[in-house]
Every structure is written in structure tokens, then in C-alpha cells.
Image (cartoon, rainbow, N blue to C red; front, side, top):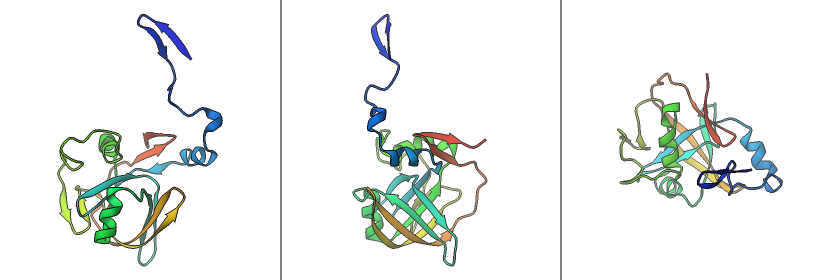
Amino acid sequence: MTSDGPGGRIHMSDPFATPEEEKSAVRRLRGRLASPVTLWTAPGPAGLTVSSMLVADGDPGRVLGLIDEESELWDAVEMSGKFAVAPLAPADRQLADRFAGLMPSPGGLFVGQTWQQTDYGPVRAGLWAGCRLVSSRPCGWALLVEGVIETISADAPTAPLIHYRGRYRELG
């Protein structure tokens, strides 16, 4: 849909969007499942926003996530054998975009925040889990990474940032 405005035509929809009939049914299904927005970091430092992940309770507890095999994060995790996972809050939307590569980060990904250096990678104050890599394998278009949780920081009560239908949402 377009509209003639004072400066010419204005698009009311995204002209670069994939037409509805060409969209993947699997991708549409995934988009309709709410996912937590998390930040994964590793020594290096390296980091990546990850929303395709889950925590499996057990002894020991485990973290599983789908990450890009060609990412700097995977290179750092593979080299160190460790990584940290932290849930993000609604106030962290720009941070999520920066680590997802959707927003510029002059000076590097870790500039402009207070980071604590750990054996698992840089973390911010709040809830995070330090994990040891135990396995990885191709899964769909990504790499399924499994880590054993070795440490969990103190829990800071905060609402989670959620990814749903291509947008960030918050509970409440």
C-alpha cells in the first residue's frame, strides 16, 4: 500500500519484506513462540544475542542454544570451552540489538556498559550462568550448543525481555 504525500510516495509497508506466500512455515511457527532474549558471552571477549535457547534442570543443569557457527562468539566458546548466559530486561533492547549486529557499536560490543570479567566471559551485574561447553552439533541452519551450568550468580528481580513475532516484548 502506498500513499501520495507532499514529497511523493510513502510506503505503508516494508518494500523489502518477504511476500507472505514465500515465507517459511517453520519460521512463522518459530516467530509465534515467545522466546527469552539472552546475552551469551565468552572469553575473548565475544558476545551474541540469543533467543533460541532453553535451560534444562537436572544434576547438573544444562543450557542449550542455537547460535551461528560463523559467529565470533562460537570461535571464542570453541577456543575457551566456556561461556556465560544472562537474561536481558526490557531496558536492554539496544544492547540486544547491538550484540545481534542490528545496531552499530563504535569502539566494540562491550563499550558503554560496566562489565565484570569472569572465567566464562564478561558479564554485567545481575543474574547470569557460567557454563562449560560439553557438545555442539549442526541443527537446522544453526549450531546446537550444550553447556553444563557450573555457577549461577545472585538473582536480581527484573522482568524478562521477550522476542515474539519479530519484535521485543515485555511481560506485564
